[in-house]
Image 1 (cartoon, rainbow, N blue to C red):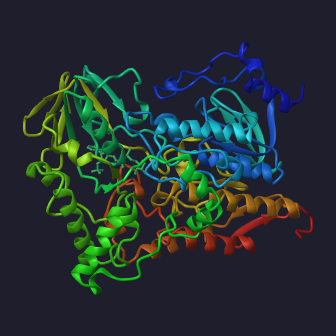
Image 2 (cartoon, rainbow, N blue to C red):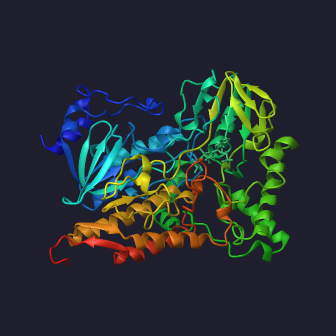
Image 3 (spheres, rainbow, N blue to C red):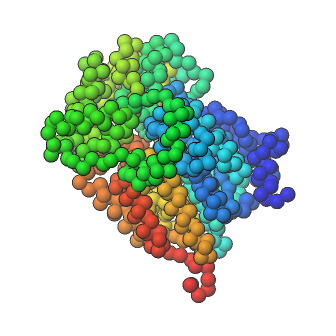
Length: 583
Ligand code: NA7
């Protein structure tokens, strides 16, 4: 049996009987289908030899497998969980779904989209998992994927010019190229709440949902009002006897305008998909909407309100994406936008006390400088008598008790369950847990302790032939995920193709190029309101992490054009040409 065959066998049905589970599954993993197996004795003893190794089988990993295969490389993907789909394997709470509308949250691969239709404008988590299963079927991804393979060590062999990658379960792989596609919002963040372990009721994080949990008739406390908190409020508020939403800062929610989609209308659109997806790629945030060329302060109140009303009715992110051009730079313009938003909320959230928490007169942070959640009937649910709102910014949480929560003013809440919608150790959290070392043996976690350093967001000095996709220091946090990950994967694969064509041994970003990239990133936000708001966009959501600018705010079109101009002549890289004479 060849090495390749032994790996295929270890992922296929034939091997199932001889495979044993070697690691404990995390709470989230225990919810997953065991559709493939953990390390078997056969694959722990052989070293997997491939051109490219991909870490992570979410949308970015899947795209990387596909594009690397197209480029003629041999590729394997290692995935810690038991299935494809990344975040959609973990986000299984009631009401979970994507805030990006069809057709923009899908891969730009005709053989995949040709015979797939979604049932709603904003698909839910179950449908997204079916979609991912469809991609797998179309592209035959399983034959190149090893599940339950948790990468915990990767080092560069200077002599061989290859990466050696190991997993917790005992796999070893050797690859010329390493592609980290480990995701942005994957590692759960549970704040260090005092007395958390004293609570005797159910407690779970949104991304590790207990499928046996029923909210019916229960008293529930929900911490968090980001996109996840909003979706959970909408579903739990309808089922629970009582729901108390504990809010530190409210999300500035936009109307989703969800609707069902017919196969017929998608059939019509499909002819236009190449154009639509190209236009998304050439846009600012991954949606082909016209940029607003006017400043709010240069037009009349009537014109402003007409524009806002129009974009509001479009639904989705339109209100934010088509903001007046001075909204993210001028405080007065930003305030006008906020007050318009607040008036729309006030027309629905009629309880004045709740309104003052969810849309206060004085805004707690600038509009559009933090992810805008989408909502369907959030404010109607908040209005319900069984739904309560607690303002943590005024009365913080003191501790968990055995029955619920004790607040700083002595108020006690009794809950049957507490749900944490507190977000993720985002952006860097997954990358720094992989045990990836630079060519001198220093872990990425150590190297990034005082701040993220990359070149173009996709390469890192000291890590030859390694590429990071769906990554920091790129437009990633604030744009459509699929658009940016496709752009980044294609950039990485184009560099690899160039190297293979020329027979180069390795490529590595220079320190100078890296530090210039960071300077450019900071320069872009100068004069904007983004640096004034803390959130996961700038790593400020987890205490102890270094808060910094991590988004390339000039947008996808600008980013890709800039990267392409640099990649063209391999500018900012040191190249090992693999020849004695250095040619
Ligand atoms: P987010 O957007 O990071 O939201 C987390 C929420 O949890 C947010 O309301 C936080 O308040 C709140 N939070 C976090 N820590 C605490 C503590 N210690 N006490 C009280 N409240 C806290 O995560 P989501 O899961 O909603 O969404 C993540 C992304 O997934 C989203 O942006 C989409 O791109 C998809 P804060 O606002 O920090 O005051």
